[in-house]
Length: 273
Image 1 (cartoon, rainbow, N blue to C red):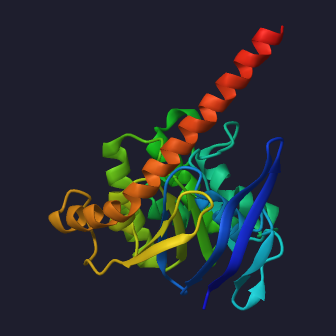
Image 2: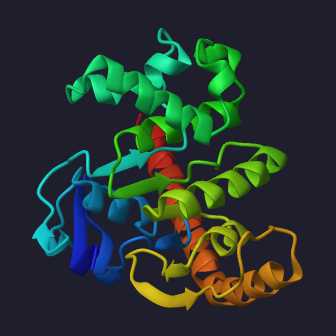
Image 3: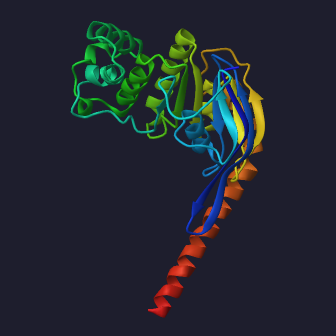
């Protein structure tokens, strides 16, 4: 078993009191599996990713990788965010090499590794380009190449395509499926997009509205490569959406209620002044 999540609960302290983001989450992820985490806003998807990355510790429960407790960050787990988070003063090539520099990989080896993964994401001809010369989709491909260059066991992807237009996102779905097929990395992928989850995942884990609990897990048996507009993807996405819909509505109501409380508090403050 690559990842074991047991009874993971995460509570944050805020000025309004304790806020539980995750509650008693149990999840096993096999080596080489592509798992998508899906749920309404605020359900703890990113929090769970942060726990696995070692960026945050659970309030209760534990996360293990290869049977060992996760206690901090490491190059065996690499996070990719919605923003590519590239260094604008470095070339594409130097961005991909950056992590390799930090862990002391010799220069000739760094060059070979960086070029290998730039070729994998079809950006070899852009290695000397500046980041600002690239489109958003190309920047995310550089971020993926940089992550793969470190040869992590696990890729943690937090809505990496969320800010991209639909056409670019569809192209990156194809590329990511190809990369996963070639590398067989273990991937946990957070998304709000139900069809994106069906296109990419071996399994789709549906989380409830906050506090996030696993509501249902769908196994995706559709052949790859998958296309987001295919009838099979649309049909399965509709089934998953039916499970998700109640919690999305609940999350929206909670957000509206919190906004109303904030506005009421501001009005009281104005009256006092």
